[in-house]
Amino acid sequence: MSRHHQDTLSESLSAGGVGSRHPQVAGTRRDFLAGLAGSCAACALGTAGGRRAEGAPAGPQVLADRRFHFKAGELHPQPARWYEKLPESWVRCGLCPHGCRISEDERGTCGTRENRGGKLFTLIHSRPCSIALDPVEKKPFFHVLPGSEALSLATPGCNLWCKACQNWEIAQARPEQIPTTTLTPADAARLARLNGAPLIACTYTEPVIASEYVHDIAVAGQGLGVRTVMVSNGYIQEEPLRDLAQVIAAYKVDLKGFDPAFFKQHCGGQLEAVLETLRRLRKLGLWTEIVALIIPTQNDSVAEIRGLARFVRDDLGAEVPVHFTRFHPAYRLANLPSTPVATLDRCRDVAMDEGLKFVYVGNVPGHPGEHTYCPDCGEVIIRRLGMAVVRNRLRRGACPDCGRAIPGIWT
Image (cartoon, one colour):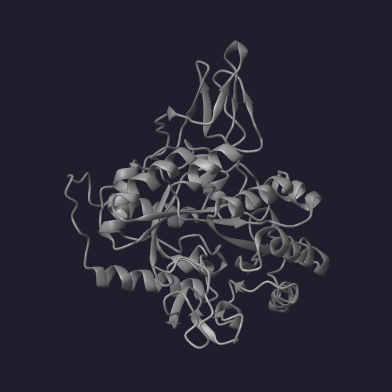
């Protein structure tokens, strides 16, 4: 999200002042949807919005509750989970594979978890920096309640530093460097319900580093019939993943590449840790989709794509959806061209040749790889255009033509 968009969003959300516990509706739902459609249309066209990652908000979104106040520099530490106390007031964070050893008054790699008096605190619980309503296809989740909206939240920071980061202004920032607002888990669930969104998506930046907040949002949402999903890099340790898997509905993993050297050099992490997360998600039975951002000359070789496809097929299952997404110049890779569509076509062909059943092409509105096809009879079951579902022919989770069951979360 650009600085201009971020500032505009802050102004629009705070325009109503501090509201009471009974929110005032800003405009009609029809007005809101019209505005959302305009933002999505901008993404579909070749505008600046179209160069944003599929997860990033295209511009300010006015929700039905306008109580928000975005203020920079305000931190509200909350006790962290998943850490170990060490001698001399040091702590070891147990949230992600970095396993940061943190001395008193210092922070871990993500910049959002701080040692205060020998205890670890999270600085971003209930402090989102972006709030928007998105189509769930924008995450992208193609097998989770197609056509539904998701209340999308982001907190500052990330535990990786990818060179192609599409949301680097907020993902690579410390929490005191950008405006945030107070939104409790209960209020997030209520806001989703108020806006008719059956989903809350923790997205845009890296929800792993806000796992306490994600967990509490998911628990609060359960009481209102709102499900929580994560859009993540998958860089998380086993214990917090298990805890989250008990309360969230789905997990999308951005698999940055399939070469360990590229992953370390490009992202600053270990590829095997993400592959292990995917294996654990399989064992936990949590619905999972995978996105691979294809960067020209960096991670687009046939050998790498074939290796990725075989890993998914053999370790996760051939029916796990895989999205090959078009890269646009961003952050530290602004010198590279956008991914040729022919490269994405090749990736999709290779993955399907290796036996994957649901392979998609992303960030190319109008591409036939946006649709969901029945693996048995080949008919289009869900037809999409960009982030919009044009037609959903699914019947009780199955192909209407041959009756083949299609995996996903449909109701």
